[in-house]
Length: 219
Image 1 (cartoon, rainbow, N blue to C red):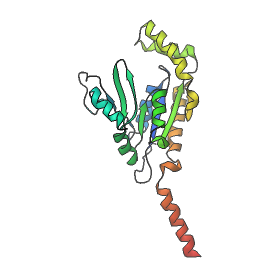
Image 2: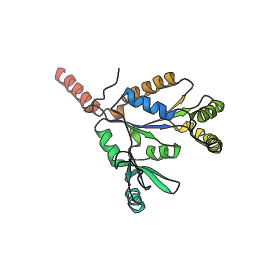
Image 3: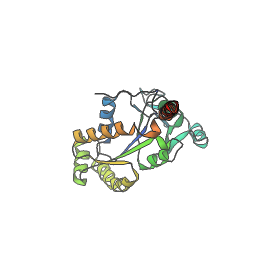
Image 4: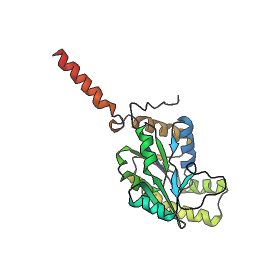
């Protein structure tokens, strides 16, 4: 059954998914959003020019470098990084609005982006999950099977994966994706449980006050 979040009774989560390329993170993220259609990917800001068909606010928020850095200096980015001479980052305002309305926001970021988000003002509302491959041989097989990269690019991704995997202890949960169906089921269980975390249920304070009032009335 697809879970239906109650915006009046909980805050949303910032769900961080990280993994080396080829471990299955993108597939799991898509399955998670199919399971719960209220989940949304965080829309990043970037200084790269729009590509044909891309729409402002859908694929990215497009900014010039000066405007992007002004947002960083004002503390309006949850995380940011420079990739191939273009800046990318996660604007805080849309995320704050979403979690305030009880909607979860999904982040597909590397360990550095995850660190920045967890260190931000919204850090207490984060849920971080790292996806591991069952073996390096299987990781390489998946990268080759995708047929998207040259042998040189695959070799570079494999080399980078060792550094990425070394950051697994920094995450709240780590899942070994040796079976996609089983990993998806565990991912759903984690999200369902974390939605019940005390910090995500601000109504509990009022509920306990009401119980205490009943105790006093019965005294």
